[in-house]
Image: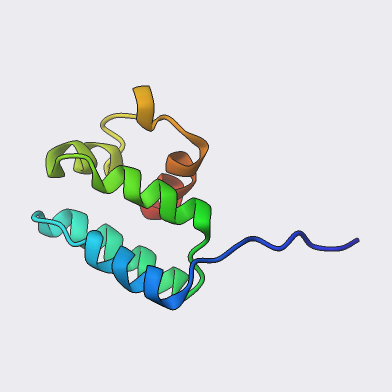
Length: 90
């Protein structure tokens, strides 16, 4: 059986994404730093899309999702967001 290649973002896009993910709340930063430490240079296009959508949220709304106080709803309830949230929460 052959594996399906998952498209990864390039080095420049990864650098921009890391910069975009800087947050005002230390708690959010800790979740995000752990994500990047685990993923390293292996961030897929889908994960980047999910992270970007999460970064559009206010810090407190993001923290509620990370701590499982809430689940994604509305326009952020996408497969990409749920995938990244699962990775951020573990």
